[in-house]
Every structure is written in structure tokens, then in C-alpha cells.
Length: 268
Length: 301
Figure 1 (tube, rainbow over the protein chains, first blue to last red):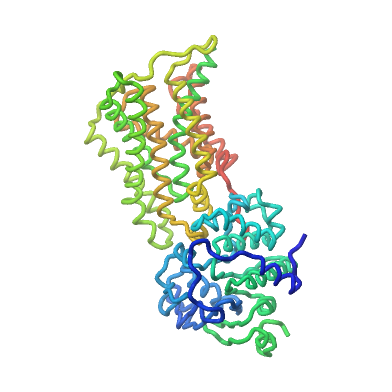
Figure 2: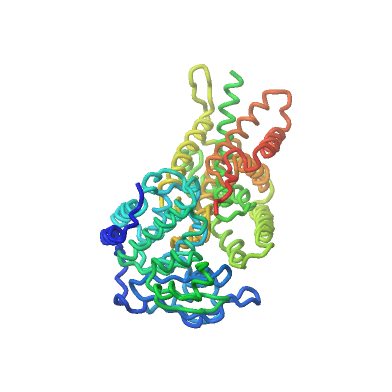
């Protein structure tokens, strides 16, 4: 059993996924309208400026990739949006709400879920328990059952390991679990931090096929990646970060063709 | 026959120690903090239990006084536990990550322990107070005659541990508690209000200590302000022996220490019942640094 990689299978799988939150009303942002807006975001560690004023925007229904070399500030950007890092200045708005003043635990309720760098699954809890905890806030039995079914179709390998402890999974399976757990909250938007990191190429393909299916189901996605080619291939648009600033941005296909990017990140 | 008798007494002793050890291990799980004030909450609950049981009629209404007094003492202990966490530990938590992050709460815990002990001396004076004899008589099981108190203690402890296991494995609170002890940041990303879970953990651990405390005093009386030091240390050793952070470990550690202590009383070496417990602890920690059931799992990144 393996997840579908063909484009038409991905779209079909996405169409069957149930993504509506059981209680939270749908945000009043139409498809294609800006959902997440980051303006002049600045973050510093001690005296070192990690982000020197980032502007980025994700429209509803889009998959946007944030790419760049190690240390460019990709994870810092995502962690600031997820409220895991204090923001020095700038604004982060999501569906009209100001995220910058929220706690990380409030973010899930607002409709934003993060699958963090390094997966951060709960190793001594079973796969099923990990998934259940993703639904901690809504606890809706029907929504939980449906999303567990959906996640099992996205990642058949997880379905076979429901009773296993999360810590016994391989790196790729843990990544699948982290994404599945984030989906359990029925988010409007999914933040993915380096989903390909340290994972076998074959599983990377499966994970990105799943990301495309999740997007096809209507979930907006911002993905941070070092694997430029894979990330841009699955995205509508991309931003290239370089030493804490946006160096380039645009249509993902055009970025893939951009000679500068090919030279710097694609070894071309 | 003496061995069998000692075994049953030891199991009852161990069950009480385990009830207290659970509080150490659960708080360590969620906060990575040894809550030294836990043994003083145990001692305080012994006094509170004594007053409540006396107030409710003592030996005149043994069932009402025993059950009612114990339950009310558990509620009181839960409140004290939450209060200690709120005023002593929580203000230290959101102070960023420095090398002192582990040391400061530890010193605070020691300070809190001394404070509570002195407070008890002030309020209750240092003299011994004896508990009403609610659980007298003995039951005969075949050729064996077992004190009623031992039977009550053992049965209560077994029921409580089964209920606790269900709470930890099946309820949202239990899952949140385990998630928090595995990875705090990830737990927050699930929407778990970590402060509330920590508070509830203190409440649960303290109420178990109160239960252990009242049972202990009903069995072997007198209450005095340094009770926490004597019994608390044994419970702490039990928690470490079983593997601190592991709930099953605390139960196992408590039972082991209880049985070991009683078996030793049968030998000529009856004076220092705590010595073998510590010896076993040292040996176990040399072989298994994480304790009998502790996890020393390296996280995959």
C-alpha cells in the first residue's frame, strides 16, 4: 500500500476529505483572498537580527512555499507566526485577527495548526492517541472519526500502526503523524516546517502528494522547505528567504525556472 | 506464617507509600520538578484529616467520619497543592530558559517544604496527636488473621490505582498530562492549556497523598509536623526507584519498599527499616539510571 502520487488521484482524495470545523464558523475570507498577512516582521535572538522585516501573504486555498538556505530565517518566520517566538515588531494577521498577541494554544482555536520542525510527536503515546490529541480543543467524536479515516487514506502506513507508540515510528512515519495530528484540529490553515527533513526520498514524494491532496480539500498551506524543487513543485507561489530578508518571490513555476534559483538551490 | 503476615503488612505499607509517590512522579512528569513540598502536603492532610474525622463524630460514627473525613481531607489537600503551585512555582515558570531554570524551582520547592513544616508546628504544635481508632479488629482469612485497617488500606489503594490508570489512559486530562510531560511545546500546539493541566496534576497528586496520609494515620497513628519528612522521604525513594515520571513505576516502587521494610523486620536487623530501601535504590540506579520503569528513551529527531 502506498499513497497516490498521480495528480488525478491526489485531487480525488482531496475531494473526499472532510475539513469543516465542527463548531468554528468558516472565516469570512473568500477563496483567493488574503488569509494570512505578515507585514514588516522583525525577530531578534539576543542582539542578532534573525528577521529584518519580512512581508508575506498567503491567500485562501493557496499552497505557498518559503524556501532558502540553512539559517536564512525560514523556521524563525514560521515559529513567529505560530507564536512560539516573541515578535520584535511587525504585524501578523490571520482572517482579520491579530495573531501577534495570541498564545500558541489559542492559535489552534483560531484555525491555524503547525506541524513543527523535528515532528515533535508524543513518543510514549500511541499513534491513535497522538491523533486524538490533535482534536483536543473541539473533541467532536464525528469529526475525529472522519479525520482519522481521512488521515488513514492519506497515509496508509499510519493506519497499520495505530496501536504502536509514536516513538517506534520511522522519521517519515513520524512526519506523517505530525501532519495527521495537525489535521485533526480541522484547521483553516496548515503550517508545515521542513516536512522533508531527514526523510527517505520515496516517503518525501508520498508526503508531498498528501500535502497536495490536503490543499485540494481546501486547506490553505504555508510550507517551509530546504528541498526547493519538491516544495515549489507542490506550491502555487514561493518566497525565497536570504539572511532574514525576502530575496525573491513569485509564481512557483517561474521560480523553478529562475536561473538564480537554479544556480543557488537546485544545483543547476 | 510470619512471613505471610509481614508480606500483607508490607503490601499495605507499600500501597500507602505508593499513593504518596504518585504525587512526586506526576508532578515530575509535567514540570520536571521534584516537588519537595509534596511530603508536607501529606503531613498537613494528616492533621486536616484528624480534625475532620473528629468533627464528624470520630469513633461514634466511624463510617461517616472515616469516609467523609477522608474525602474532605482530599479536597483540602488538592486546594493546598494548587495553591503551592500557583504562588511558588508558576511565577518562576515563564522566566525564559537560563541555566538556572532547573535550580531555582528546586530551591523554591525546598523552601516551600520548610515553610509548610514550620507553619504546621505553629498551627498544630509539635506534640503527637493520635488518630481515633476507626479501623479496629481483624479479619480471619483462613489460618491468617489480618488487621481490618490493612485490608481497608489495600483494597482502597487497589481501587484508587485502577481509577488513576483509567484517568491517565482514557480521559482528556490524562492524555493532556502525558502529552505535556512528553513535549511541552507540542502540547501547547494542540491547544492544551498547560497551566491548567499542571494545576490539575498538583490537585490530583495532593489528593492521593491525602488519601495515603489518612489511611496511614488510621493504621499507625500519631500525627506530628515532621511526619512528612519520615514518610515523604520513603515515598520519594519509591518514586525514583520505580522510575520518576512513571506512574506504574511509582506504584511498583512503593510496594517494593513497603514489603522490603516489613520483611526486614523479621530479621535481627529490625532497627533501620529505611537502610535496605536506600541500598536497593542505589543498586537499581547503578544498573538502571532511569529507575525500574523509567524511560531513558532518546528522542528521534
